[in-house]
Image (cartoon, rainbow, N blue to C red; front, side, top):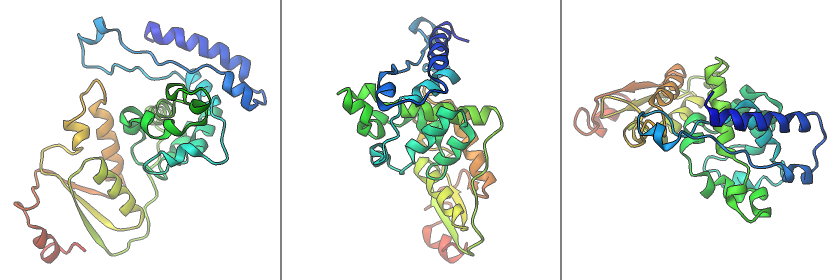
Length: 260
């Protein structure tokens, strides 16, 4: 373990031992300090392309999850573009049931490992967090993205991830042009409804901006490929080197290939 990460982990373990098993009040939760996240030192990271942000440890994620007040009105959900039930998945993370946490996230989003890293949470869900508002500092909000990243990474690394449910065959076929995050999300939602889905990607790798626009030290490509493989296991076909408009026109997709 990275030395910085070990120090943060030791402190989190101490806090966890104090807090675990107690009936925490809102005041108790407000007193729990924000869990910092270790990063590579500048002298290290100029020599490699590995992730700069090193992520939480298990003790850290559980302590950070304990900071959540479990607000009945769920203001954080209003800031989430896909409406993830944030308090519910954080509650499971607090208990240590990371697979259940991810299953809740995947009811709304197929990309927790990606979104946990690159979504601007400080402008979305965390901006609405009651804890951050009480402290008058969005940077003191519950670290929703860091928790999301940890639970997604944990389930992937421990083989606990489940393939999202696919609906009964609808008999409909849908063509999606591009294979970036919007296309991936649309494909997953359409497969849940039972439609046949084909992604058409003009380039030789799928992923769009996740592959070609975000550097490795921010979002490792193996994570993007893993999320795409989940999509394939749901039955989505991905066709590479296929330029819609040239390889095939839109009219041909409808008239000759039978897309609806």
